[in-house]
Image (cartoon, rainbow, N blue to C red; front, side):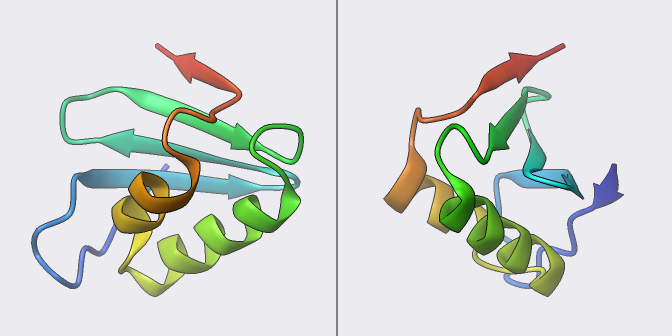
Length: 75
């Protein structure tokens, strides 16, 4: 996983991994969630990867648009 740049300095995200049709996001509490083209859908996965690569807005996007719509919890 790549370290999340956290440009705002206040994110609840520490790391992420973008792949073909998925993104995995690790939060400060250690939980890791996978979001896929199936759940919550390809548009959200693209937007989540965009935020992750930009280093800002990832946790906000998750809380506003996908909330508990994740494919699975890892770990």
